[in-house]
Image (cartoon, rainbow, N blue to C red; front, side, top):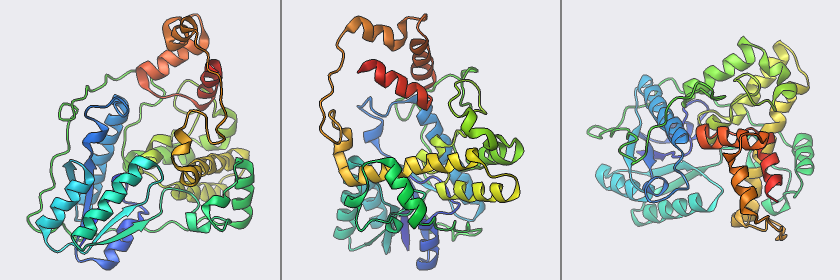
Length: 360
């Protein structure tokens, strides 16, 4: 039996964890943990729209797995404690399987999971699956050789690496072990959070889940051909069609960057190939690059002085800061910040850059 812990990968399609477990286990226990460290006693993760998106995604994955004959086990608790309890409850867990992460808090959880498995004499199987280009396929001998400039990285991988093919989805997954309860998906109240109100002005009215991600891709690529003008429209601020909107689904693992890449290549073969279709891949490469930079530099990516330990004098005028926060409607950047952060918590890339430079 394998216990597939997949906290940051909320999809079934193309998921390497499932493919490995199907070949190597009698039963698979797909597991998602709502870690209290993310919700209770902290302000760092308390974004109501993000939480709703996450809850939607968990519900959707459970529904999708049920169609295959399996389901999703949901628990509230620290993953290392939940997995330890499941190992003892099931009694015959052979392997715990999960995708590797790159930043310190997630790596600490991985370390604790490995310790729990060692204590229980259970094997660990990890996979790399969050990027377009696989870590092992990078044209550098080790991660320390990753260029510190994006363009050098992009040119190297485009010239000397390839994107691995998408894995087929499994139509049938073995049922859960007898007697194992699925567990309820928590509510906002359970997590001591306040459910956000819908805002008709939102540029991101989409909901979480693999099904929604695939619907969005179908709409943006095949139904509207909006992808063919992506490069020209991507820095817009209003509406739904100016950009792909894939980022939230990618962030929680509802869709794979390789699946998006495959669909782009299909679109280019069947419809048109231009700068806009390439630019979606270009942006996926940016996403890869930041994850690999995190892998290379660890916690230095969070340091105030940056990777180069370069001191940047920050402005300390509180009147200017309070105006920037969104209290003054006559300033364009102030109103866009107030609208996007204080109300719907989505912020276009160009506006992020503008606000960064306004603070330094």
